[in-house]
Length: 496
Image (cartoon, rainbow, N blue to C red; front, side, top):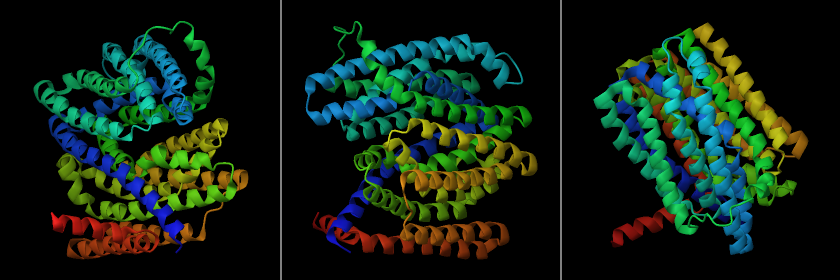
């Protein structure tokens, strides 16, 4: 392999590992927190936490106007141009718009509180709870704008520190309050965490650009282009959050809070925890893809390399997750969550398809086709909701796991069809070969969970995990300087 190719793969591997590592550290701390919360609140309490968090996220996304995403592009352009005055001016503009969206979000949360209480719960009056959550919505809007400023200014170290401190604060704040006040502390914890996250983010961003109130009159009129860029993304976010809220509300009414808590635990492990490998997409991969978005050959090369690395890194972890879930679920939560194992094992298969779908999905955003992005996201969530409802009615919680996987298969086919016929993207034979091998190993791992047990289960399961790991390491060794980097670090440790 040419030196240039090795360097290119090394870059993708490096930044995927860096951002994935930060996310992994966050997840480890979150696991401890979730373990305590599960023990203190039980499935029903976790279901209640899910309902409130989902609602807050939905309102936040509905009123944010996409500024947290669209502002990154504009600030980055100002930063690259070296025009400090223009950069400072645009930062002021972003803060003005975020303050406006914060007020809008809080007002909406208060106004629709009675409606949310009626549609989300089949028992009791929870209007006051939603009204008390309004400050959290406002603070999330401020945090989104300040985070966009840090991303645009390439302050990735600060963002990593904020993420780690936030998740540690969540552990320190939530566990004592849940222990003392049980479910009564749910709303205060959500508001307090929004405050902590905002303070940590503002602390870093204000160091770069101190808050200035002078010269803000009439500044909002300059931000319409930024807002227009974010509208489609905002609507897509509304559709996604709305779909999640609809599913959770439907499960709460059709089943009960216990079923909802189990579903949320399975979904959290499958989608949230298993997605840490994909955390580098927005920070490193998306800017690189945007730079070559109008060059078909360069786009194909960039997308395919990202797919290869994402697949090779995530697959061994996914196979191990399928096999070790009977041990992990009681450790992460409690024995009350054992019924969710079967659902989670089949849902993990969805992440194999996600690893080769997400890089292609970013082509649409890199080219600025926000309307097509909205269509693709909406189509996915419509199918996702329909499959969840059908799967739960047919097979209960296990059916929701099947639905998650089928929805991601549909998303894979749809995204690649659009990328192929609209943008000229062609998936490489190498990606197809790696995908076939790793998905086959994943399927064998899943069938192991439903066909054998006892020591035979662990022999086959651990064996398949090692096969997946060794295959990935072999390919990464061939295409990067992985061994050389590891040997340098090992020698450095020995010298110390």
